[in-house]
Image 1: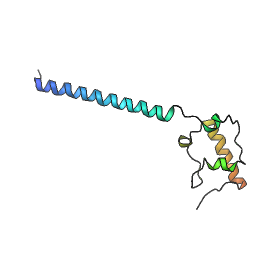
Image 2: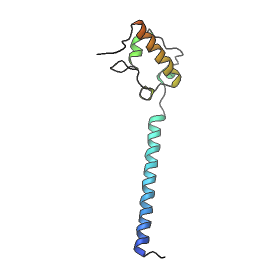
Image 3: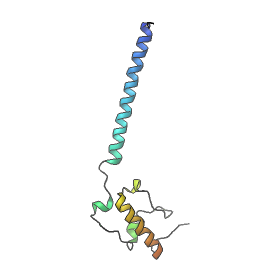
Image 4: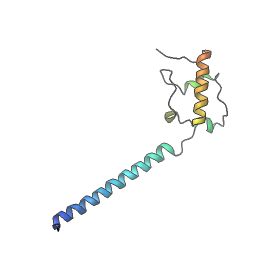
Length: 104
């Protein structure tokens, strides 16, 4: 079965468009990765802090939302190690009454 010239031209045009779409998606994905994963450093790593003190309420407030919830590390850019220490410090500060559990 042979294809007509117009059908061949349409298939060729479609393939070119598809390659353009794929390359644009790839470029956008690479830009997305560079924007959100590269050159972002944990606040505590950049300050060379080994411990997070629960008595520093002003520092801990930076990592809680307006509803007194612990903010996700994707938004605060804290590493896993410091996120665990931060959560522990926030919970201790709440227990000691330095931070609220909820805000109404």
